[in-house]
Amino acid sequence: MKLYNSLTKKIEEIELLKPGVVTMYSCGPTVYWRMHVGNLRAYAEWDILHRAFLYLGYDVRRVMNFTDVGHMTDDDDFGEDKIEQAASEKGKNPTEIANYYIKTVIEDFYKMNYLSPNGEVVKPNTDIHELGKYGWARATEYIDQIIDFVKKIEENGFTYETAQALYFDISKYNDYDRMFKQNLDEKKVGAREEVEVDPQKKNPADFVLWMKKVGKYEKHIMAWDSPWGVGFPGWHIECSAMSCDILGEKFDIHTGGIDHIPIHHTNERAQNFGAYKHEVVKYWVHNEFIRTPKDEKLSKSKGNALTLDEIIQGGIDSMDLRYHYISVNYRVPLQFNWEALKGSRRARLSLLKKISDLNSDGNGGSLLNNYVERFEDLLKDNLNMSGVFALISELLKSDEKPENIVQTILDFDRVLGLKIYENLKTKEELPKEVEELLKKREVARKEEDFEKSDSLRDEIEKYGFKVLDTSEGQKVERI
Ligand SMILES: [Zn+2]
Image 1 (cartoon, rainbow, N blue to C red):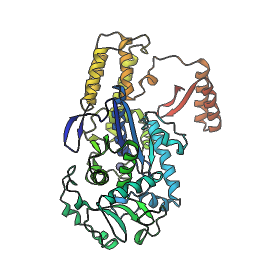
Image 2 (image 1 turned 45 degrees about the horizontal axis):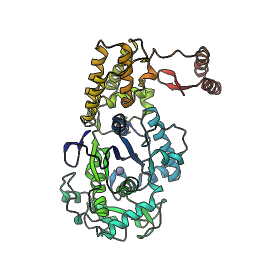
Image 3 (image 1 turned 90 degrees about the horizontal axis):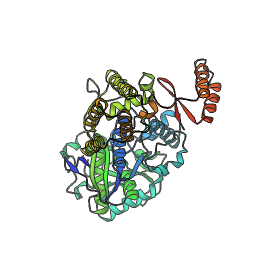
Image 4 (image 1 turned 120 degrees about the vertical axis):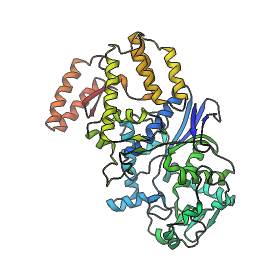
């Protein structure tokens, strides 16, 4: 596998620390709002990477986090804690807010057919306390490990303490800006508020490892005891501590959005070095953003920071959005507007129609090895997804046997995750009873008789089918 490493700024052949096993950490969401289309893109790209490794026969050990404390507004040391801010706005406590939004992440992952870090698609009603089993790590459940990690950095002499916080001293790490060259003096501009909050902070680019529950943060609700007093961890230290605790002091791949490069990942890398005096992550891999026509930043006020549910209400299926994300390489800025989404929808439906027109569900077919090999080569080539879709078009036009074509495409769908089989028109007929129940349920839904529609759903389940309500109406899947 070749990937673009943001640290060396080159496409590199991935050499795993342990042959056959991929260790990977993906920066996960800060759980204070419903993810928008920009957040969702990142997880689509790393889902493809995860699935590609599995397809190629690797064992994948992956971790993704939920940040539920310490992530400040504007990524500023002295902003407001995003979770606590959302909690006070909504009159809830921070745990309630985090729990609520963690559930929405799992729901969105399910609808988008994203693997959880352990390689399963987790069902939306899964108990929130069970998510650790699926490879999710929640920051507030790792406070002890975070404190231990900070202690290592402190013992190695990379920190200093003020009345307000414990800081990482970037002057102690001369390789600090290797991933992102920056004029550190410029960071002094706009740091006025910092001076007010903590006049003892030496360099504006130094960053908080542990914030004390004093001064501006006297009323911070989430706080723990520590060697530096009662307080809470900084956002960057959480990812360093959780990744190393679970994956070890060296691991292969760290993913995130390009916005993480200048601060979050630069700081993570510094902390890792502070704790272990060596590079922890071999390959830093980042996805590009989605772009709006006017190149505006996604924001609620501009109405372009749409959530998945808003996209679905607009007549776009979650699989259309998935298709939109995965049809290009992770380093390509992706156009995002309704027209582009409709284009992806048409492309996906046309792909499904071409497959359905072959009148085979792949049964009895065999894999076309020459196509499989080319597919694998395209994946290994820095996830050449436009190449993958071109290959599929070529395969559909070929004069191979229909059942072999379909069988091969369904095999590719283990990586694409577009649920092609479930959407094929030619697949097995539904039992008559299920057809009848679906019709009745359609009527009940139109009449907004949800009690009846739920009981019909339960009846359908007894036949071994699960009903999904999508923008295209009811769909059934085998349980
Ligand atoms: Zn992170």
